[in-house]
Image: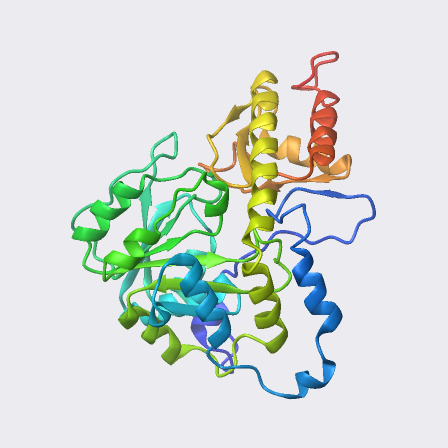
Length: 358
């Protein structure tokens, strides 16, 4: 043990983000990035922004951006928090809505950052196991937690939980329910915004990384009761969102139609690839996200298939574990990228037997 380092940090198992290899010709289907570019309005900002303005600090509370978010999602200005990516929002929630030595909770499996955030804040983490089909299960009534994370659609499964089920749980849960809607724009118009507007303990977290094609920007936001939002502002860094990010995000949010058109393309590809994988013997969890959680056919372990695809310059995501280790998470790319994936699958033998292919 190094006495100069906080013991909690030394013992912490860090979150492992998806690989970002710099390999020419790689088909990258592992981190749920949008395969299509952001709005042309974003390009225009990058073309016209005055470099001289970068000598000035940014607006510390993202005023113009919050006005647009409030208008777009039907909230008051004091119901909007803007952060440096949704991961910052999640971290601040973990700090704001737990007590020393307390507990946060989430479903299992779900976003693997949640337990890391809990450990960093030195609070306990409680998992509510999902059933075999990864569908909604009501958390127990005696749950001793002050914060419950609900990724909806869930990651890595892609399952969308019924809004009314989340409402029922939120109305009886005494703590904060943080609904992580990173993938909600691929869910066919379903979301929990009404809960964030109506219930005092529901916070909805969003990101521009997925549907808005801005993963490299790092911008997220939260919507909820003014008291919850005020708590986040007390904890944030002074200038947590840089000047350029605020301008780009505002341009993207002013062109929602571009995002929605891209989302429709991704959903259409998702449904086509789902059917193609099922025809090849895969079990595919019904997805409302921009990825698929797919179990390969018998005789082809998921980890083996992950390695075989990598040999073919196709990168997907494999999560070891008793529940997740039977599956691969496959981001939805362009139609050409997904066709390349399907072609590669047809060339990989099942159980090493000659002639028998996926």
